[in-house]
Length: 410
Image 1 (cartoon, rainbow, N blue to C red):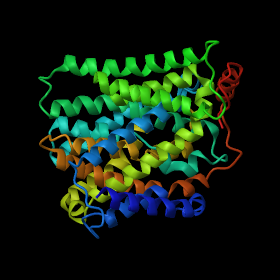
Image 2: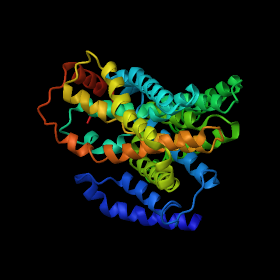
Image 3: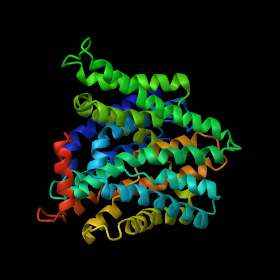
Image 4: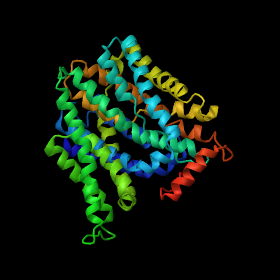
């Protein structure tokens, strides 16, 4: 199985690389390519890649992929970014994220008939967004910088913010929450402590006069920190994912040089893990699964995309000063991406009574989201022009951040 999966992944990765230039100019999406390839190669169609939810390979890949992505996500949003552009992202994260979670949970409860805990679990899984499926929007300089910054910061932070809710609702649903809440709290707290202490100590150590990384080895500095956080987290049973996210933020805050040297290298590593997880996720989706959710499941998926996020964003950005076009773009581009994929895989392997049903609903929503969002980002991006006004407070905030050494918002 491992060899076949490796060959399949390598072949699809090569195809994605060859088509990547075309994908940047059209509605073609590399993420959708891996998802569809996994679906076609999986047991439901060709049977080339045979995977089961309980396979160790699935669990290990999901764990490593999420750790890597949360680490690199955290590294995008050090305290300088959060201070410099918090006004709009703060609304999306402080109001939009919990409102999306609750609205999605209400839909799962009343439309599908799931219990409240399982419904809240689905809401937490589907609350995070992924900038990969809005790449043409986020990377287009014609789009107002405040809008690009909003989507970047929000999607970089909300994976980590949603994680504790996923862990908590999953623990309650599994019945372990009569609950060893103390143990759960210790695990989460220990993860944050490891994620802050290990990078801080490593960065401070390099800043002493006895140590200095050579130029060729500089990109490996943050990689070594991430691996050490992973190892210490596993040894102490701290929560690996909160450790990863905290470690990324800590590196971004205290190690600007380490962050810059690792940025491109780290994003490539994270991208490889993302695409591998999407291939595995696609292989676990079968025609039978897509049909078994019924019309209620597909209606839930549609409403989760076109109702939950838009309503939450509309409420969150009341009197925020966004134009109608900008607010519509933010409301639509809440794609369900990689974090939701891995959270869904974690639930599938958890053994809770409703694991299969939760995974099915999450799966159809993610499939629909990837297909719709990754094929509409370039269309929406073309609707913006260079003359879009940006409020004075945005420029002032970024000028202040530049004086503090934070960089520019492009």
